[in-house]
Length: 424
Ligand code: GAP
Image 1 (cartoon, rainbow, N blue to C red):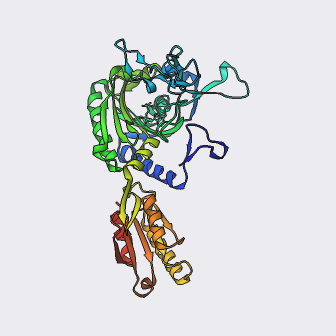
Image 2 (image 1 turned 135 degrees about the vertical axis):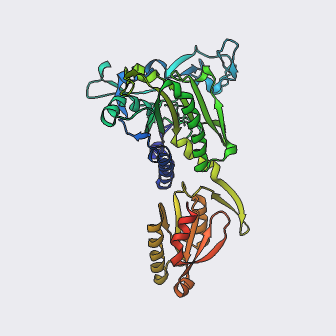
Image 3 (image 1 turned 120 degrees about the vertical axis):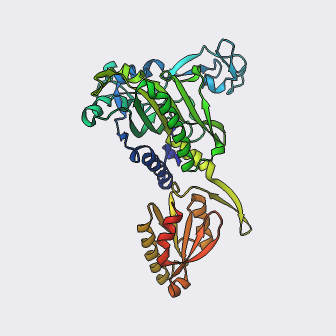
């Protein structure tokens, strides 16, 4: 990952993904989509526009309520998110501000607290006036709510059912920080699951268990993920119950993803409802919303996977990523790049592994073998396969395991099935 617009000094709160970061991110997306959409018969996927009519955000409550508390130092005019610099709350529930400005150190200099709306505003078309204002979506959720009727009319799903979307979200964070953790442009993976009011608790608990299971499936340890029931005063304006799944990031425990009971808040405000053909009832479904920040998952996985050990008398860094998320599944090396017979055989082995593996197989002939192993360790490649002079004699290769550094000789004919099993 690189800072966004880096050669021009960057743009705070934006990050660009390079080839490996993108592949890691895509692997997380694919695992999520498989678990929560493809493998279920009660889910439909969709992809809504990022620019939406301003009326959507009026109805959703975002224009009125999607804001953070802002304070400004009278002396240096630096602005802060009040809850980020506050040491706690007063008895009346007001945020207690530090006595000194964290920027200039001046004593007692705060201007009165205000609310800062986090949505990014833009204008649609050539005329910049009130009527052309639009907002970049601050959550993917509303794209699904406003398409509820379209989906009902074209697919006729029966309750309970869910819609899922993976897409960009934009928030004008007062202080983006901690690398990918708090960005101004990021990706969300969200589900809006529609049900009868009487069923919400059961579905909430079910998703709660499924979320924990999936986090562990992609490699986030049970000991570093914690559930937190969010107190009423800290919940979003639409939620009646929220459980945050927090992760022990290197900079402290913080929110990774969330599960909210949004009641009928959104559909009611968009004036949408559901007609039950069997009971002939018309009512507004209630919504359970599992919401995941993709970039926070990338960050958590990197933190979780980072390892150092001693190998061959040296400290080595390796990413202990699970094979299902590792960007590169297998790397193939010819022992020497200036021996055409080795390179040719290595390309043949690469093709065999590539067609048997569901993911990226890298060919690398740069530098000595030790360096190539280290490079793959650092990007978390589970297996390296080396083609040497013995391969030309007996058709065996060396397979090296990332975590143990152990090497074994394997017949080329057995490679595909061995790697397929090990990468599961
Ligand atoms: N639709 C519900 C919703 O948007 P949220 O708690 O505001 O809820 C959901 O956001 C998830 O999006 C969070 O749990 C987090 O993973 C991610 N997220 C929120 N703000 C973010 C930011 N500024 N940068 C990166 N990820 C963010």
